[in-house]
Length: 217
Image 1 (cartoon, rainbow, N blue to C red):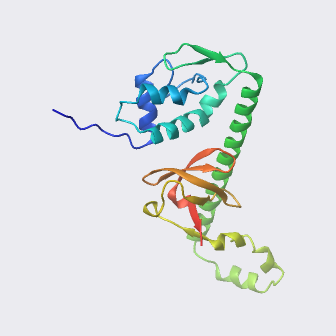
Image 2 (image 1 turned 60 degrees about the vertical axis):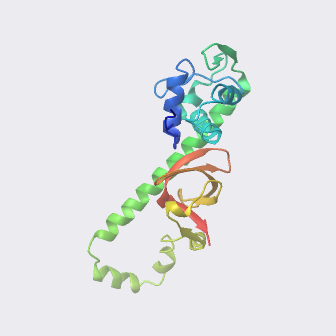
Image 3 (image 1 turned 45 degrees about the vertical axis):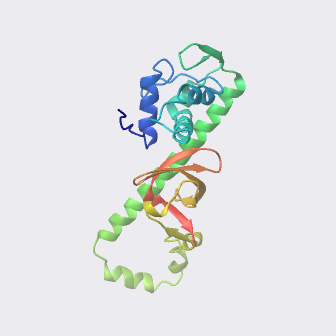
């Protein structure tokens, strides 16, 4: 008698599954351990007969795991890498730490830019919600020099972007992520309802709401 196997369909589920299968290697919270170089091949071999997770989901989850801030902070010179069973599998070298620090800094910069853009959008919405002041509008209309200063509503490049819905996106599609003053190009790696995972051109993978994802017209 066969039983239906539940396929894992998002990154968080896959990482949780890996932490359950290999607790000496993966964790879902707290300090992470640096992983053995080439551990994907070990995972693929150990889970070859496991229908719960596909190689594509496995690769995506592993990329998200090693791009997480808590993982990047764990990559320190002299720290031991671990294999799937928690055994020592190599020492972290200076170049590995430098790469992790650079990736962490870039990831934080992207997150800060997205947060700033969100605050700006919320402030604009709050302002728009207030009743319009007719006298203020008339005063602005009488000051022609003020009109150029009103160039902040919309940078010209945004006119070439088109909003999309989750069901209009597909894995591998080239998109633009709205984060701050200028959109950032990237490729969709995973779609989880309204959460879209996008790998940016600098190699970082970020999770954004579908409202922040656009395609060029």
